[in-house]
Length: 216
Image 1 (cartoon, helix red, strand yellow):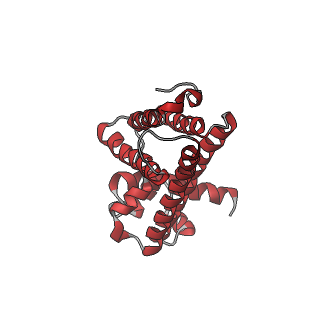
Image 2: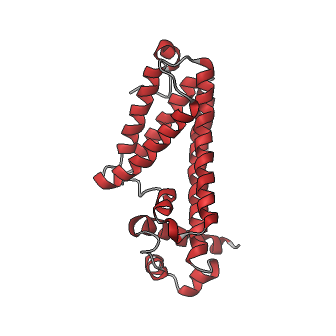
Image 3: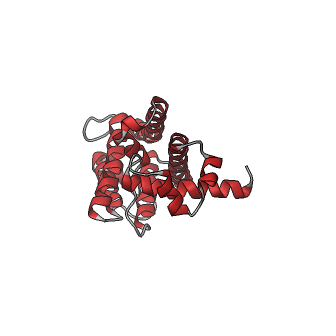
């Protein structure tokens, strides 16, 4: 695909995502997307054979961008310290800092939007979303497994439970962010989870608190 073609395709996807998050997939027409982009139907159908193909491209793009962001936070944490708990606190703080720099509430999660409108999508898309959630969870779970291998928690907990908890916090935070028109509520909720981790591993927290700059 030429550079101009890639730019047009990205323009369509960038316009379609907020529309779908705001209006729903069923409530967003191709004409809505064309109005937002100023493109013709010919331009749209040059890149997508219909809304079904657009839906797949959108969710793949969202998954790729989302995972690349969290991989970057992970790499930064690993470069900052070798301690697994300090790495995890650093990772969470990097995410919080990213959210706090946003000027508008997070538009929402494409995975959640597609799940709410389950009947609009074919089984392959649902399978892709489930796989993406598992991949995201595995990134967290690997971190928590390393922490639990080095630190004894104050209460019984598994790496999977901790991973599911932070994922639920982030996904739920997106809903509250839009509902309250509060762009940083996700960061505040993540900070509460980070403080929970500090309490959970309080017997050894002295070594781990030297994260990326703050502990609360």
